Image (tube, rainbow over all chains, first blue to last red; front, side, top):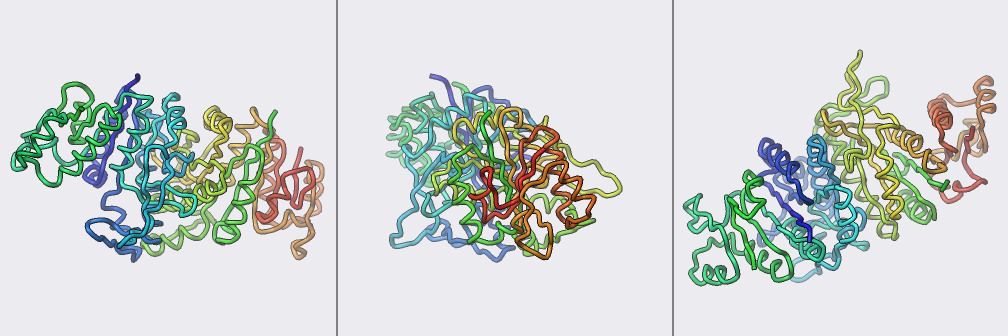
Length: 263
Length: 263
C-alpha cells in the first residue's frame, strides 16, 4: 500500500508567521501523498474580542454558540485556511482548502446536549469520512488542507477539534494507505523528563506504553495524545509521530527526532 | 456538447436570509451541471466596521489594502462561502467551496499600480482558469461554489469581482460546454422603461443591442452588464441571462422571465 502522511499543526505554529512559513515550505517539499490539518490558534479569540464575541470555556473546552460558530467559520475556514493554501501554491504544492461540508467530505453529528450544551460542536467517526473523494483528490496530486470544521445537514457548520479530525481521517483512510499521522506540537517529542527538553523517547509501542504508564513517568498533558494515538493504532493506522513542527522534514522516515508510536 | 449553467448572485440575495434560502433551494434543484459564484454583500463592510477596517472607494471601486484583503478572505472565502456550501449540502447538492487558490483553479495577476493603487485586486483571463480540474469536479457531480477571490503566487489572495469571475469561467469552459451564464440582480430583467418594473425586454441579440444603444433607451447602470455579456458571447459563450434571483427556476429554458442575450 502507498504511504500517506496526515500532518496536524496547531497554535504554536499558526501564531508565529516565520514558523508557519518555514513549516509550509517543508510540508510542500514532502514527496509523498499528504494531508494537512490546521487548528485555530489565538487569532480567532483576538478577532472575536474585537467583534464583541467572548470565548467561553467549560472544563477547558470552548462553547460554540452561534456567533462563535460564525467567527470560527470565518477565521479557521476563511482566513487561516486560504492563507495556508495560497502559501502552499506559491511553493508549487497544489493545495485545496476544505471544511467537512465541501464535497461532503466529513459529515458530523452535533454533540448532544448533556449536562453542558457545547453548542455547535461536531462529533465524527471514520465511517462519515468520504474516503473515495479524498482518494480521488490525492490521485490527482491535489493536497487536501483541512480547517477544523465539519458540518451536519441539520445544524450547518460545526466546530471539531483538529487532532480528532486527523485521527478520524487516518483511521478511515487506513484501508487505502499506509499512514503516518504527524502531530506537531511545542516539544521535540514525548519527553521522559518534562524538565529536560532533549529527553525525547524515540519509540513507544503498546508494551512500552503500558510500562511508562505504570512508572507514572509521563507528564499529564501528554496522556490524552498518547491514548488517542494508541486508539488510532488499534484501528488500523500504521504509525503516529509526535514532535515539533520545526523538525518536520526529519520526522518522515524510520529515524526520527520525535516520538514514533507503533503497535 | 453538454449544457452548463454558471450562476452569479450578489448582495441583494446574500443580504436577505429568506431570499438566499429560497434561491439555494432552487439552485439545488437544477438538474444540469452548474457552478455558483457569489459576491460579498454588505456583511464584509459591517464586520470591517466592527474591526476598525473602513471601506475606501475610488470611482466606485473598493481599494483592497492588506486589512481589507484579510477581511474579504474571512467573510467571502469563509463565512459566506461555507454557509452557502452547507445549505446546498442540506439539499443534497454536493457543493464544494473554492477560491482561485484552491486546486490552483484561477490564477490572477495583481492589478498593476497606475494612477491609483487598488491594492490586492486580481485581474483574470480565460487561459488562467484550470478548466480540466473544473471539468473533473463537474463529471463527479460536484458543484463548484466560488467566492469572489483569486490568487497569485507572488501576492497571495486577491479580490476579484464576481461578475468577472462568472464571465471568465464561462469563456474558458465554453470549449467543453454549451453555457448559459445567469446574472441575478434586483430587477426582473433588462427593462425597456426603468420606471416600469415589468417592462422586461425578453431577447436581445447583437442587432437589437445596437438598436437599443442608438435609441438611448437603456438605463446607464445596465450598460456595463450588457457590454460584458456581448463580450462573452463574442468569445464563445452560448447565452447570457440577466434576471431576478427569485425567478431562477423560470430562467433555465428557452422561455424566460428575464432577458436572454444571444449572438
